[in-house]
Length: 293
Ligand code: SAM
Image (cartoon, helix red, strand yellow):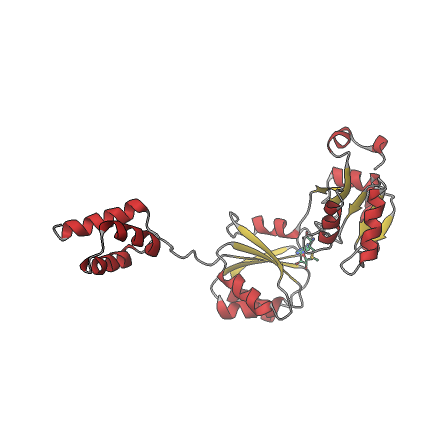
């Protein structure tokens, strides 16, 4: 970055950064931060997925800068050239077609290579479809897992199984072509689970449908899915993992009839039934009293 063009805060806090991960709009071109524009103007080069997409954004903000394509299929040579460019003291901004680079988008290999080479990486935060969808979904936001795209290879069945069993809210990316298939697969296992199907975030046709998995499937049987989708799926009900005192009591009665010592009983209760030491002692005492010992 040309230092004379930096803002004061950037001079102090971001001077040594080599790679900026710059989030860009996910639909509405107004969704970009002042800092993102500043960084895109002032870095020595911008690496982007598709230059035709990024040019639209750059034109909108009158940003003139060098663009180089860097995408999922870029080879190792390309990555090494970018690393060499930064090692010469140049700064690079990485953007994806939309949203936050590295989130279901290229970024990770370049970030990893930078860190291995001791080059500083920094985020210029902004839009991300998952983060935009979750808080407006109406589904519990306290704990969530970002699942991204559900793979379409041989691991799909086990990933779907994991998704159905997780107790945290999950955020899933889906294309319009595969939405119905995914909802059908989920509805076979968790038809009554709450789901928000959110499409076209920040765009004119933005919509959110909060319903059950089965009803969402039925909806898209008749309405053709169009646009980009995020699914926010409610977590499975938390299982009651509290220690099973009833089972512990039954076991203890039998063990005491067979002559187990109090000390051993306490240890066994802790190990077998995950009781605390105090709870185990109290149970042993209770039974001893009942037996008149
Ligand atoms: N890096 C992006 C981000 O930060 O969200 C995600 C890129 S990923 C290749 C594209 C997927 O993100 C889409 O298939 C869709 O699931 C989701 N997505 C992106 N923009 C969206 C939008 N405006 N509305 C709904 N979903 C969107």
